[in-house]
Image (tube, rainbow, N blue to C red):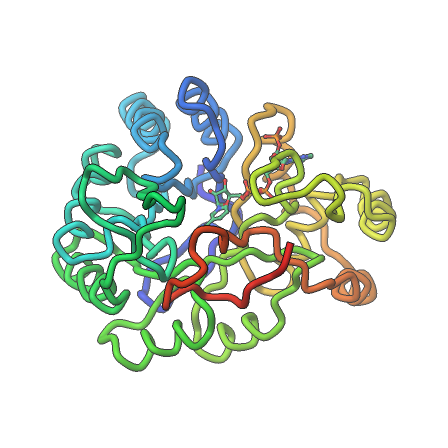
Length: 321
Ligand SMILES: NC(=O)c1ccc[n+]([C@@H]2O[C@H](COP(=O)([O-])OP(=O)(O)OC[C@H]3O[C@@H](n4cnc5c(N)ncnc54)[C@H](OP(=O)(O)O)[C@@H]3O)[C@@H](O)[C@H]2O)c1
């Protein structure tokens, strides 16, 4: 089964418009959940070494392909370069590990997870902190990481390369200094954080915007505070969802598709896994899209500033608690 909707990337490849996210899925559940997602029709699977379950995601993909349910070519596998792997050597090593995890000879998409690099010695692990509790910055420029990704693309190990959580100045620096243009920019986007400037920039440059945290990661206390606004209870979204006989997350995903972008969504609930990809048989009206755009609060959830205060490549202004 082919994905219902794909978009053309500037690399020449197609990306399924809705991806299944794997952040915050327990290792023990990951293989089953990714299999459920594949059964439900997702063909784009978003993973990352820092999610600490990539091998389990890869296992689901290996089982899927060897069962003959679809060929590798029908899947779109994506992963990320973590902050402790920004140097050329470490970046290339991490790419090889992805290929091993997925038992494949190419990744469809690899993005630099964050613009800031951290200490790379193995002793620090994935979250290297000094005695003061702060992350230990590396002095690797993300341009070095980009050039390693370009080389991996040229050698055929990655079909499309991109960025995540970079601000527009940083994206522009890659755009002008890199030899290959970013195909994808993965950023937080939802009705409380509509990212209009980023959307316009991506449209102008022909970069695909891949939205994450589309429901605002409602069940998690990682970055979210209890009192933060919750999209699932928003009256406008509930009313629009009701008018289509859909859920709020389905409505948000449809908004993202209707305005020309793409999204990744995670759930471990079987019913929601199936619901979240069942969004291709309805459209929002112009008025409904307008009403959703008006919900914008410029409210960002993902903001790992704490412990990163002095990193020269931190992408956003400090937001006081
Ligand atoms: N590049 C990056 O830095 C970055 C950052 C964040 C995320 N991502 C990627 O994007 C993916 C999605 O982001 P996310 O997981 O943070 O946020 P999200 O998709 O907005 O939120 C996922 C949360 O929403 C709940 N949910 C999903 N569908 C639902 C539904 N139909 N009704 C009610 N609740 C629902 C899930 O709970 P249940 O599981 O209990 O259903 C889960 O707690 C991640 O998994 C990851 O792959 C990348």
